[in-house]
Structures are given as structure tokens and as C-alpha cells.
Image 1 (cartoon, rainbow, N blue to C red):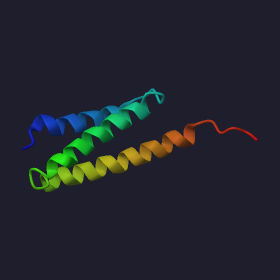
Image 2: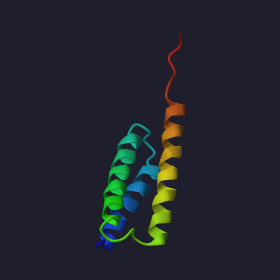
Image 3: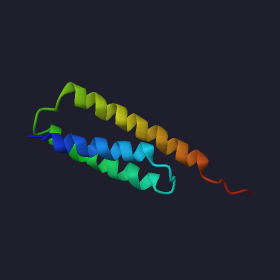
Length: 81
């Protein structure tokens, strides 16, 4: 069963990722958030999928992380050639 601490962990990591101002550190935050979300999704198998609210929040967070990853890739310098 899930505790509120488990939910807060992935949410806290997500907030750290989207609020990080040092773009060099952002990919590390994204990976940590994804790992925590993956762990929570595995727990869903044990507690029948969690709440609909949490499922929606996870979908929103994953969408936000994908957008953030795209932004970071666009900011990377492109080699001229």
C-alpha cells in the first residue's frame, strides 16, 4: 500500500526538476523523477492503480518532463558543419 510519503517523493522530485535553474543539473532531476514515478507505477500493481487523482497527476508530470526534455535539447549547441 502507498503512503503519502511515497506520493510526495515523486511530486517533490518533479517540482525540483521543473524549478531547477541550472540546466546542466536538469537532466539528473528528470531521471530521478522518472525513476520515482516508475517505482510508484509498480506500486499501482499492488494497490489496484492508486487514486484517479494521482494517476492524472502522474500523467501530467510525465507530460511536463517530456516538454522539459525537449526544451533542454533545443538549448544544446548544435555543431556546425
